[in-house]
Image: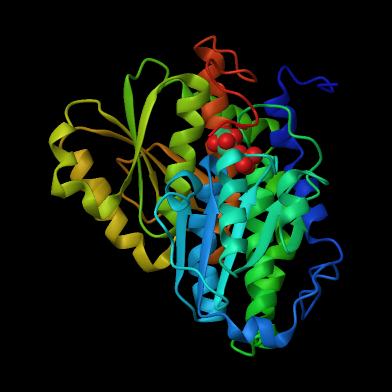
Length: 366
Ligand code: F6R
């Protein structure tokens, strides 16, 4: 069933061009986004005053990226929270609330309980999930399926990127219907999504994988590593760090790049390894200056950049490029090299990639 791959994780990483297509099929059009499965009225949508995104782990990380897009298209405040925190803090919810629950399995206990709490308090609930008929899909008011196919590897890969695409589609759709984001004026965003499957293919060639495998060799003896970025690059960093922790057992910490000098820079000495994500034009120069602060203290930095954005200084010879794309969709493409980096690091360390110690695919205990 692994179709020639050594692990399900690698198989699932490779399925991403196809899962990108699947989550968009029938929903993404040249100048519109549709969700035939939704039964939301305009009145309901216009009535929302705030949004909560609630999820765990990797699904939570997808929500961090979704937040800024939903804020932009719906012009409403969006709070993103891990389900085990959200449900125990008496969240302010009412008939003006939208709560988006994200869960690959649709069975995560804390996310399910957060959904129940939200419904009880009168919020509208939308579930983004991969598993048809799962508890969360049965109980949510509206369901957006990822159609990513079964994900066997404990480390989530294709479901994560499908969640990102689903969140973008949802943000465009709701913003357009609310009359606050005219999609017909933003065809470039829709085009950028349509290009993703082919761009993902280009990140999965044997040559590209070998390049990333080589970079992983510099990490295999690390005890700790930092992933830094700003804005959505920071969200990407958090997912990158989780992936390498769970499968390679190297401690990794994701840090908002601008926060380094508020304490953490004290940890940087000769050879301290960093992965820097610098994909957003708006913060590129700022992140670069953080990278230089690390390099000045002899830290080692591997940079994730967009093709064409190679103005970064030459002494930073460790770089991985993703295809040129709109900044907004960069987190989706960035996921792939970071998944591969974690995979090859774990492989070189002899870890059990598909079944990391202490972890279960679906967390049905609270
Ligand atoms: C990490 C991972 C977990 C899950 C989390 C939520 O790779 O897979 O962090 O993302 O347990 O699971 P779901 O999405 O099924 O609710």
